[in-house]
Image (cartoon, rainbow, N blue to C red; front, top):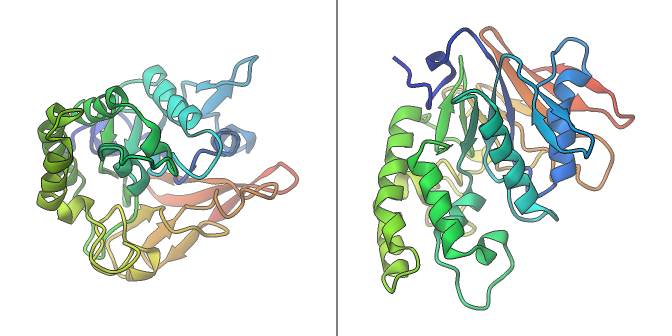
Length: 288
């Protein structure tokens, strides 16, 4: 039986699964993508905006999955994190899931001195502890099992067992949290990342996206068409892209400097489609 923390079949009924990946700090694009569900007449709203423009859970029968890399590159990583955590707090239990991406993985590391290129390098030890507590509570997970597809940041050629991966992430977090801010911080985290390399590792190939990378790092080019069905992000595309059994929804970064292009993927028990914001502001449905 599927645990509600690990997959949609653990929830009551048959909620529609909506996923968004690789927001990368572009809060306005995240809002637009999430509001695409409801801006198309075939779909009830997933979220709604208050008078100040803040996005809230709208209360319909959805399960929302953030497929990693909410932070870095764009102007408002903190705002995107606040959006994700607000929706999780407002939605019924287990209806908003946040899978770890390689950029969130950086939040686990001790901050190197004199490095501030990424949002992860600017968070406090208290924020790192909070991030680990969210893993321990099951709010941040490694993978989520949909009806046919598994939602995981970068994917794996052999697929990802969501329950096993989420258990491993909790094991990692439980061993890491007490070391945060101590003299042993760096050494403990180096050891733990080695122990959990199959899940968290970026491999030995240059650039960390090669064929030996784990499911937070593997480049879409290395996912075979006959891999188990997965919805991934991590590798930027101009539009949602299918390769055999694998679909990539990482589209915000490539469209960040032009109107439209942001998208969510929508899975029901018998279909997977994309809702894409068009240049003129409308929303189109694209079969995948």
